[in-house]
Image 1 (cartoon, rainbow, N blue to C red):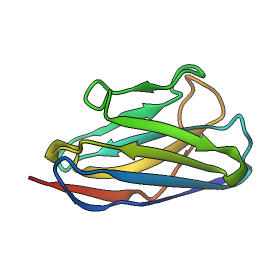
Image 2 (image 1 turned 45 degrees about the horizontal axis):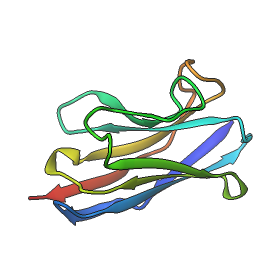
Image 3 (image 1 turned 60 degrees about the vertical axis):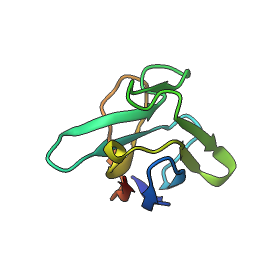
Image 4 (image 1 turned 90 degrees about the vertical axis):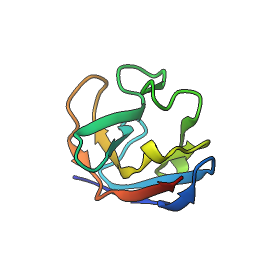
Length: 118
């Protein structure tokens, strides 16, 4: 089993920045694929960024150029740096883990709320 715990969410004004963290514990490894997803009120869950299909990070079109994912294997932590935040970025942000690229996610965190005011 893998446990994922997100942190770093909060309330920020449009144009501001936040950095989310996802701490993984349990049966982790450097090859565990951890991505970020989000779910806005009244909408389905969507992919935000990460190594979805390969070792090259990919991002949703809506966040390209503003969000960056990074990883510190020594700390078992994956980060999501979010810059130039917009009100439409308001959502519950989750990290999700899987054992290989392209497979279904096996583990989910509980989410951290990000609210961007206009």
